[in-house]
Length: 324
Image (tube, rainbow, N blue to C red; front, side, top):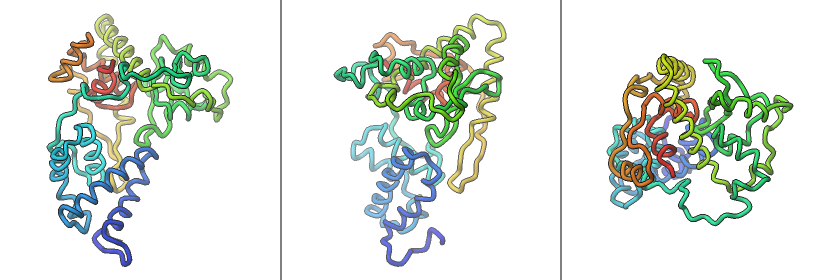
């Protein structure tokens, strides 16, 4: 049935929401939950403000929606989240929509000065959580991904480097989290004697409120320093690392279109060339906490692609290297 045809017995709003479900079915559980909420909000906006009856009509008002959210004083990060869902569903590039700039200085997640009360269930020094915390300091994956790890998930990547295979990660995608050479023996010990389909961690080890994202950020900083040092001290290492990044991009950097087709994203050499300079409020934040205000793009890309599976330097910078 075409999206343009109204289904008898259903309100237009309900019909538009139902037509979103096929798109959501390709996403991970968490993404489905968030996108459903954000897309529903957009449909309600289109119905109330523009009397839209089809998705073709709704698609014309994405910029209007961005302007509306700004007028309602929504935070920049919230506006980006809402627009990400809408643009993804309609296949509209985010860079075509005018929106407020997000600043790391405004982020609240995983800040060390959030004032949280230390309890037994959120204390990373609690012996019950010692294994998972130590693992996270070296690998740095999300807690939901820790829970899925099995004995068969320690593998070598396309360049022969030791990695943890992450199943159904953010966005429902699989990825490889590279292990630094100095940490290989430590991580291998976690998988010794664990059956191929046996869990590496027991539920009791992960049933807590520990800020694993903050630990993930600390590991990202450590990895950046590792790559930067190798680039600056070892002849030919920069060329070798760049070749490995291009190869990983070719193998893993894909995008699923709304119609289900998988396409490969083109690689932009600017991702690994030159210097990433921090500006505006983010620069003020970096200076305040004694952090660098410029970063080597090649080392930054290595962290983003090999250790965070984010594929974008700006996300790595804003959400990880500038955290404190």
